[in-house]
Image (cartoon, rainbow, N blue to C red; front, side, top):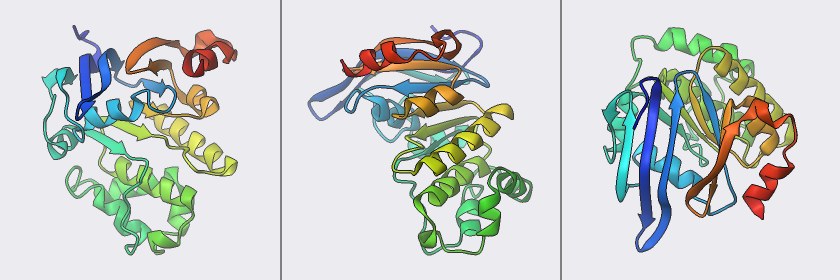
Length: 239
């Protein structure tokens, strides 16, 4: 049962692709202003869980509650209107539009009236994008494209921001920059659920972590309690 403080609650969630079961009844909650990292080996169900919350993958059974409303199996565009906004691994940018046009699309459905103010906020988070606001997205590096994807999500003023592998394929320099940006968002009160393979990034920005193993929640806890000893977490994920 969801606690009164829970922004998002997932209860006994089962998901399959055809006849192949991926999630076997997972449960977890996230509170307002909290950042949770979802960890696990490839195939453990991390991205599936996130895509089910977003409405891109249907649930077989179970319940997803957001701000007290049952959003299980609602269409993805309706879940977006509720304020659950995902940045996918693919980034899904429009390559022949400028950085600014890509960003403004984030406010086309949610926050249209506040687009100008939010654009200034995004450029504050991402000074590099301000310098490149007139460039086409296809001319950017992978790290810069990831910044645009996150910035576009921020334009919609999300109630819950979902980040699927934000460090995927990026150089160490850009991983560090993305870490700084996520910390800035967190400092401003953003609530985030993040799937991440880079344990260093995951533990730098998260309040809590959840480990998925074979479609089940196998462990979890508060990051502060780890005292920088991540060996046991690695064992939980990969052994």
